[in-house]
Image (cartoon, rainbow, N blue to C red; front, side, top):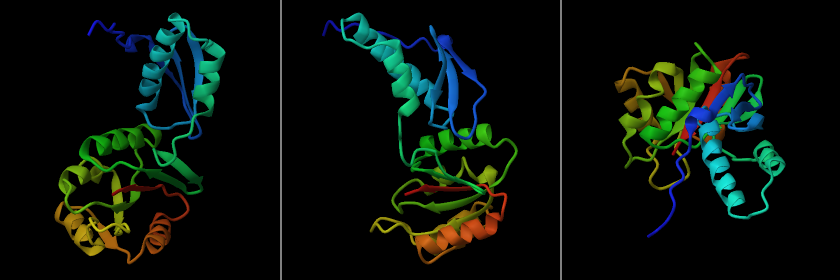
Length: 198
């Protein structure tokens, strides 16, 4: 089609120490960028966005480095490895397939090294439930299974049984609010809790 290809040069990406409120990184000539998205993969996503914006700027679009910096610093992505509270840490992530769960598991290991999680989880019955659970099983202290308010959602006790069949500790809760309360109770004052799935 005659289109130009602009590969992202990830060798230009340098990760900086990050916190539970932001990721920090350099990309090319843009230094000490702040991104309020906590997933370990988000600086890589940002590098793709920056590369795209630089190509557009080179084609005459009025996109300054300051605008890129401000856009990254103010971006919001609800439900994507989102920290809802800090005491105890309570994360919400929309991962719902095996590759997504692998990315979530890596982010949990990076942000909370050596810690075990109480997972609040719901999964669609027609999905690869075992493939979804495998990446997070080694990180689990326990699971609280709930059923999302969707016809395809696996019943909570069936999901808890499936988790137990894979060697995990699991119980079920009759509603999502009950599941949240139980996950927080199990996690205690230190947590952390991660709600994910569907």
